[in-house]
Length: 172
Image 1 (cartoon, rainbow, N blue to C red):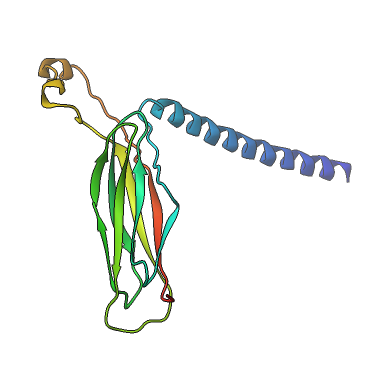
Image 2 (tube, rainbow, N blue to C red):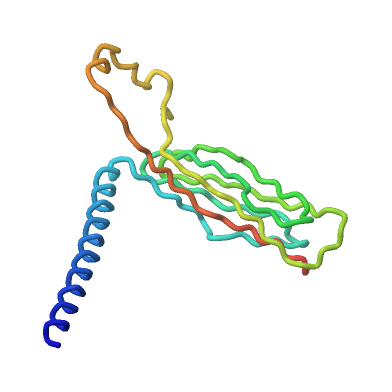
């Protein structure tokens, strides 16, 4: 019986060690990605987490913010309730200059049907670091083609995005 217990104990120890090894490998991979991407990482910053509209106030806005570098934002509608009216937003694509913010305006126009339920529209806000935002004379010229012919280069860019909700209440 002792042999069975020690064998069972050894098997549990091996399983535990393999789980720890997988966890350590996953952590190392995430750490490597973070270190490699730290030079061009961007974050999505928005003035509020969601927006609420109603019949008395069918218009609203949020502000998209940038840090030390200019950011390009793209806003797309990804979920819309059935039998909903029209949700308008502007701008759909924008560049926010460094250390500033730009408003995005939302407006809801009800359709003719009387729907007494509250609705939620879901938007996806994508962001990436803006390219070539300076005056034309400060944009660097292309490198010599001979310097790129000596090797192969590849990179993966991660572009963060967040889901943003616009709630439309029917009670006024």
